Image (cartoon, rainbow, N blue to C red; front, side, top):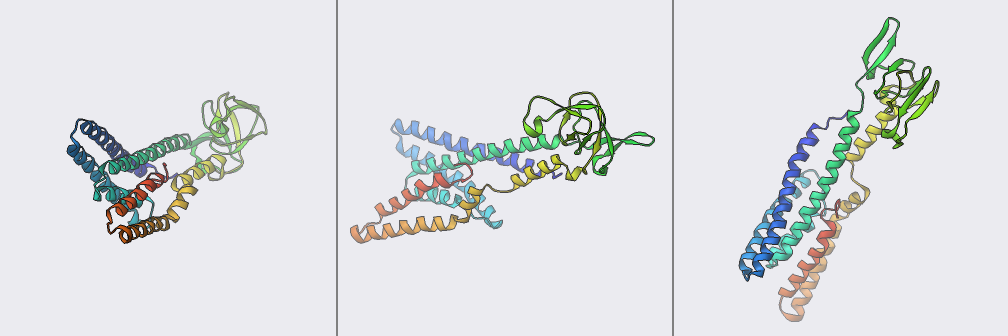
Length: 291
């Protein structure tokens, strides 16, 4: 089975950092608001700007890392929104976007952590050995050595290691890990038994019909592992058109700024409108997994 140790180590560090960013952005927003209500607008502006710069720095580092991997996402719009807000002095807008971005990252991390825990539990149920009948008695063997036709003793409380049929008598099995069915089911001699089922009755003999790598439970584990490595369809779609979306946003904003300069001779209002367009788009796209 695929080792999850590197994934768990990296994710634990990332989780701490993301929680820190949320605490930083949320705390700065609240503190700045309180100070602003106390007629200390300049201090509030500096607090919001400082926190936004820290979150923006973390985001830029993540963007650079993704670019090195050949991946381009819509997080760039969140970075532009924060940088633009700082550039035009809209620090409140900047810290709000910083909080939305870091909060989205934390939600994504929460979902990923839950999936990892379920994956760990799934892998933890996979038996490593089985009790196989031999001519001279019983022997504990690795499940990888089991072949169709082997007769295996399944004791009470054990997880069935391979697909097979009940050899003799009957078996009472808990299939909740496979089907969600909470009521144990009884299987008579000759009935099919899926790997991953738990024997909640008396010990019984199982005649293997598939090797462990070809059994149902191994297939489920492989599908879950593949699903964790892959991106959701909507995320893949968002990433695919990220650059086009970004270009359209910037081009539209630049066109508006140019129009404002031509009609009023001042670019200030146009630049703020451009920043507003980027800010509006950023919570919908950064990160696409969470918002």
